[in-house]
Amino acid sequence: MEYSETSGVGYMEVHAGDQMEPQWEYQEDKQNQNYLSQIHHIKTAINLNTFYIINDLVEMPEYKFPEEMEWTDPPRGYYVSEVKEKVLHVNPDTGAKIALVKAPVGVMDKLHKHTEANQFTLVLTGDRKWTFGYTPKGEVNGGSEVKEEVIGLFIWDGPPKPEVVE
Image (cartoon, rainbow, N blue to C red; front, side):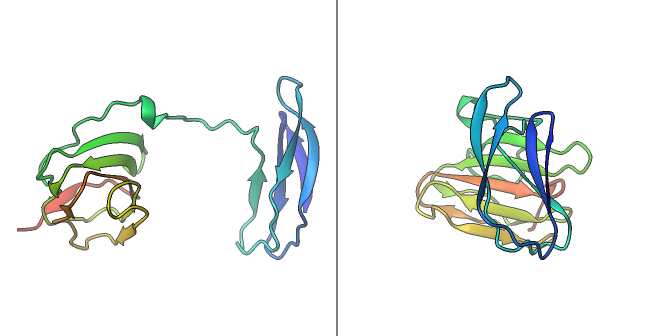
């Protein structure tokens, strides 16, 4: 296990089987303002690959603030009601998509399948709050009956490209 600092960003390289104790490291950020950051406590790294625990100095390449985004109309075809979305990310290489989806009361969508993407859903508001759903590639889903307005986080690991099932 080793500790490094690169460009003001501290990270710890951890390998499978490494034992770690909670610790604090005193570092300087890019503006030379001192701060204290906790490096996360991990008893055992269980991933067989090397991974990095990165402190809060890391700048992510893309930030979106959903509360500042407008709800837009998603592509139609399988939505039955006036569903809206806020697209948080689309991978230009794979077509993977992450979006907040808002559905009003009523039937949300037609039965459909995504042949090129697995779908992961986490309901954030409404009567099914904190419900997590997973639909494998090619499996029929939809026909969702919404009892009160719902907002969910939808993640497709490939292009969604819904195909309506008659």
